[in-house]
Length: 89
Image 1 (cartoon, rainbow, N blue to C red):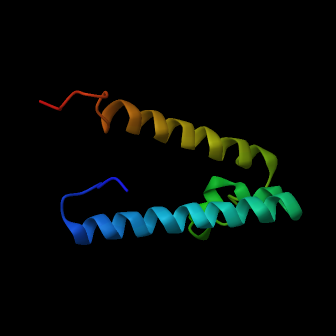
Image 2: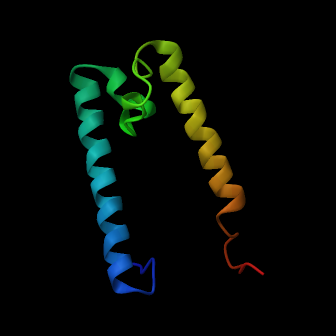
């Protein structure tokens, strides 16, 4: 497996978080297919609904949650990643 960080402790921690997150999403997808699609609301997944109750309920909030994820992804893609083969100055 590719090394993400030069420090082995940080690399192991990052891979553990990634593995846990992927496992969590697989379980949520399984539950969504069997019972309730709203468990895939990203506000619910990151537990933002604990700070703002009711945020995980309803179709409009479900759609907004994925809009927020698209914006976060775009920000990370533009500002926090390098094009392949290029280093940051």
